[in-house]
Image 1 (cartoon, rainbow, N blue to C red):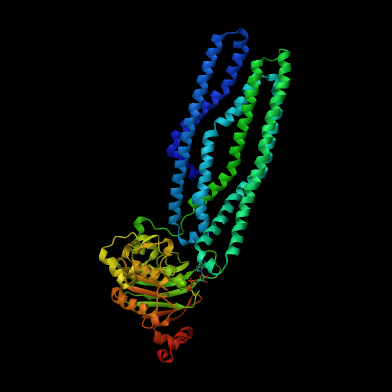
Image 2 (cartoon, rainbow, N blue to C red):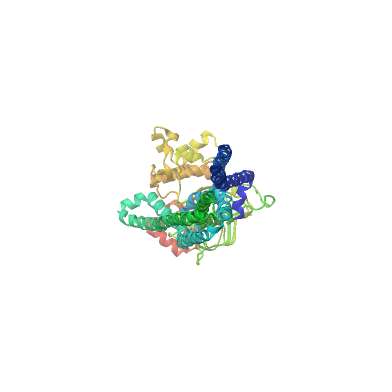
Length: 575
Ligand code: ADP
Ligand code: MG
């Protein structure tokens, strides 16, 4: 809570003004019926027009002042709460961006989106309500009771009975709706997840005719959420008229009893009228309070969910500035006894991995799917931290680099490559400082020029969200071009040639060779032909290195490698 409240600090004086204004407004409301009773009790029986006009004018001024205060307070509270939610959103988003993949695995993407949007809106709504009612509602409830008793002591029993009745109604309301309100946020999460999955996976869903099942999933989540809203709605629908009924019955009883008391001169007409107005005010403020109380639980759930984000320390953080090192950029990569577990996994994804990859060398990693190849290369740009052992770049533990510096040294083409909405150029440059010739050179080498030239707008050809308007192979080539910018010393290609035909692949590799000849190149692949002349080949099997050496060495000495190779190569190539 403290962290979230800190965002309100800079608006403290505004909050004080809002609370003061609402205080004045409540005071105005509290005194108006009292003045009215004076007019009825003193002014009218004496026919004192001057007195009536004087008090009446005074009441008008108070009422007007109260309204002005209310308008300004509303205006300011909307502004404060909207500004607060903007700050909070900014902070939460920045925090989420600082998360490592470990945290992304922990919170689901859908939940992160709900938290950045819907949850913050809940808190904003709550803040707005609280600012406007925190002073007014209790003041009018308590002040109203005091004033009512002052004007009609003999009628206070009715007040006690009807207040008790209203509180009982509120209690019933609470006990049913509060747990439901709490459940709503998790249901919004679920709905978000299904919506996202369905929209981004629409091609697969169509291709497999899975609309019906997906619809059903969506329907279920949608219905669950609707059901919750309905329950809350029904309870409110039933209880609000009940509150009104209690208020009206109270008025009738007060009038009935009151008129007798007026007849017996126990109470004056003006006091009776004031009493009724106070009773209305009290009930009204009870309703306001109950509304605020009702959104508290939902807002608290949201606060908790936001705090979970703000309180999460990213697993991967830079060391203190003075402890950071920036060794010469040679490109050497070394794994020393690296073991890695995914969060919550029982089995390690990598076990005791050691190897050295030197500049000017090509290191290939081969192994069946799920053997841990992508996991291994993900550790080099520190997308995850090792569980045990060390990864060294340029002879320094990568934890001693700043993440920025480390990643600057690496040209990484992930297996699941990603294009962003924009154009071809923005996807290659990707916010770095580059010269024009470098862009063309990268596109040239990655064989992307071929299809860029075919586009009317060339490098300015628009790319749709997630690159859905280019083919898999074109996407791969652009991702490779992106990695070549700034000529890093370390290149990681995670299955990056898989969508290319053999001809394009060989052209690409020929063009790539001079560019990367002084760099460390790590290639993950399934194709033996791609890596036959690699300087060293690492054979992975269930997270273990089961062979390391050249193609010829491994053919003779690694049964796993021989098996993979023999399934892809001819007899002559095998020998
Ligand atoms: P490869 O690239 O060799 O096909 P991966 O490195 O992607 O294999 O995966 C190795 C193992 O780690 C697999 O068993 C996979 O299920 C598991 N794995 C991959 N990513 C995650 C993740 N984010 N969370 C948990 N387990 C994962
Ligand atoms: Mg992989």
